Length: 197
Image (tube, rainbow, N blue to C red; front, side, top):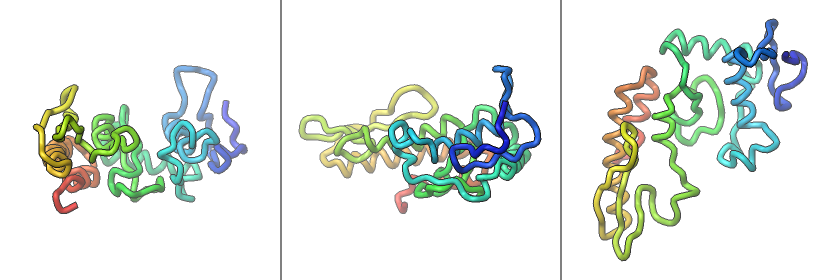
């Protein structure tokens, strides 16, 4: 069962008049589960250890109330169709955004979410998409439509290799944008890896 009057992760208010978590393992309110997971990413005591990339992330005051968040998700379903298998993303529209709020968040597919993941901590000293081999720089880009990476050649400088990565990433981003139902997400993907950005 759920505790209506207890704060969720110290900040969230569950104002639902109906049960949102039940003892039946086959059903829990999908809106509540999304809301609870969002709060967990931002306010869990173990967040900094398990998810250090969420260290400075917050949830807007409006969404600290469950009913407001649920209302927004239902609106997204009405606009874009089923959200089954979709993930709530806070920085697809504005990459530097750190706050979960209605105008900056969108639901994206796992494919899109994985595609824009930068993996800054794991790539080492070279620019993204670049690996140093001997005295040259290999460029490669993850293909979101197939398993594996596309090899983009060896280059004399890390900057040249990174530019080859950016060009291919932009091509893939535009193809992914064509699959998105949310125009804000599609627009962001088409502009995210532009040479002017």
